[in-house]
Image 1 (spheres, rainbow, N blue to C red):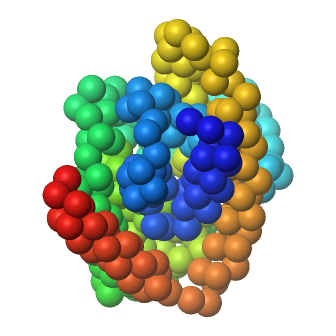
Image 2: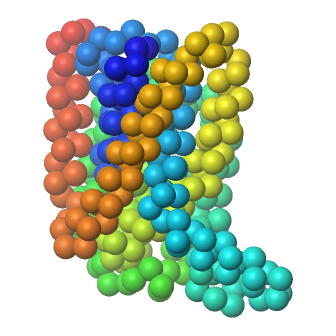
Image 3: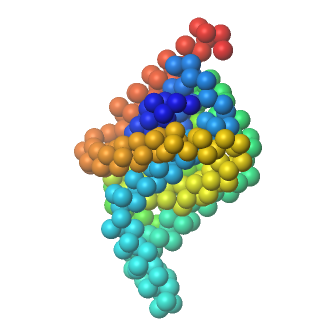
Length: 275
């Protein structure tokens, strides 16, 4: 992997981690389209590191929210009233929402890693993201704010996040869909989706760090990986700011159309190339 490739993939990750068009799908399909020869192990670790970079973007954008949630939660625990305030209640709901995907990732890691080697499977899963987004718009009533979120909502959104372990299924798309199918409005579903990414991305970062040290030339790869990391963090911040504003008045249909078109395009290219 070259530094230029790393930066391009970092920008793609930053844009597509939060915009619901599947960052994992793009990180698999873009190198395939351009014929970039990147080893599967190196690519898998790099992709996880880019997810950690977008975690930096989440902290940068939501730092006041996160500070308030952490401070209030600690205060309520000390007072033996862990659900006394909306912020601490939200913290526990976010924790509950991360459990399903965390367990699935732990037990299915080996199987899931193999799917990242299949551009065809990724293209098909990208069509799945389109279906999810259309379902959110068609069946969600969009009548509830984030302050109205309940335990069952958090569990359901957490279950939908399991789908995002597959390349081509957008994490933000799956979890925003999960929230909207529980009748949360678009901004509320997106905000909860972005905040619930924090625990799972921290876990992914620890996992990537362990795997990175096992690559024989990982010291040589650090400058290249760092360039992509910075690119992903900056573009991720910009993507969050743009999407929250966009969803305040517009639908997810445009992203569904994009996912379907990009997925079909890649299926056709793969068929033509005979791969």
